[in-house]
Image 1: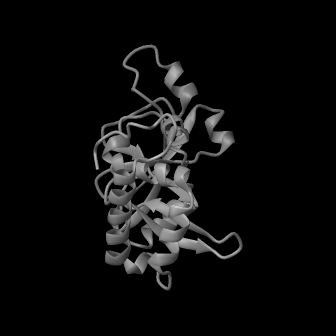
Image 2: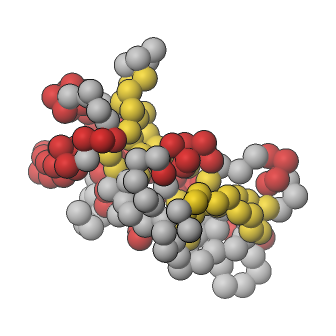
Length: 193
């Protein structure tokens, strides 16, 4: 699913795109039952089909290499929680700095985008450190890459940003200048439907 959504302005998928996305999500859901034990695909699909804008966001997650999957259900709101579950940081979202301020602070060799801007355009949220650690309990992710995570304001005000990865069977949280970007660092997102 690498084709850009032609109707990205109105955030509505064509019937073909919707069918393609639902098929990919269902196959991933069935293959990775450990991520959502006790949940049923039919209920997830019904929720998705009732929300075109969230379907568009999931399509964008899939298109950029995130391999979104259900990782939970919030009984208080009835929402299903999706995270990017690709083995490595999504390929279509790498080589980005942390946010717009960091992007604008670079005088030369600017990346094409920032993690927060891309996430906002896709209608998703960056994972928090806590969510990233929850994801790592479901498998081994980012063993060769790293992913930006939501950075506390006090760190960001001083010019820094946080990212995480998994090395030596351990999840690490690191810091970098928010304006930095690397070919092996992207971001993972979450979406509630």
